[in-house]
Image 1 (cartoon, rainbow, N blue to C red):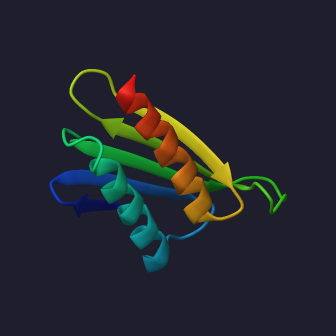
Image 2 (tube, helix red, strand yellow):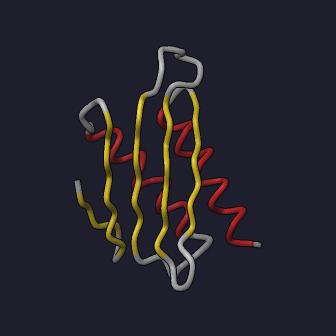
Length: 98
């Protein structure tokens, strides 16, 4: 599903389940958090997937940020969507300073 967060086109894809308003809100919150560190983001592709049956680490998030030049990519995993999103956003933030 496609959303707009400020002037950024965000494409949110879920695999194996339907997105809920709470998940969309969590993704938007993390995107806004990432935007504080980099203002030239033009697009964000977010893929959420539940993998395997281990509840400790079965939620995977893959982010691709469209920025001028080379696109940035990060993947995070955790027991909850918020933990997975935070993991991936921290990995993106570390790429900003490199």
